[in-house]
Image (cartoon, rainbow, N blue to C red; front, top):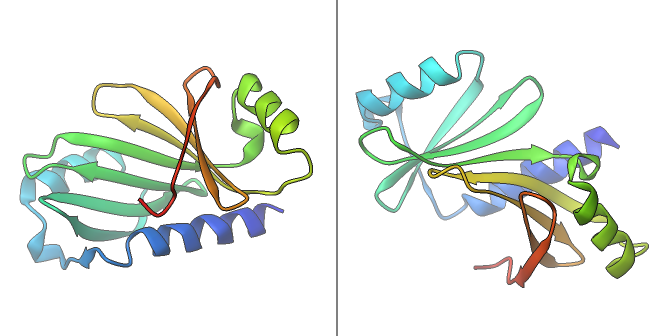
Length: 145
């Protein structure tokens, strides 16, 4: 099950960055690289992308897929951690059981913005559902946006 979840997370990550520009080490600002390496010294095989004016890095650390978005000054704008559905807050799990009984969860991410606000993204049945940090359902969004 975990291998399948990892594969889903990996494929989702590939889909999300398909339009992003892959960067070489020389194209990443020194400030950004320094902060990244000091915060994530155990990161495995970081892949860098240009995301508008920002810099996105995807990597594995302790078998968890991370995506971090930095501005050109090295300020962290967003972190995204790939999770299994069992890591969702209880209220979110209860919502899914009630409203999506029998449906398979395709992907779960814990997203924290630069101000420390956490949300959970759940991809299920071709939908993206957003939950707050406590697991309260917020809204459904088009996953293609």
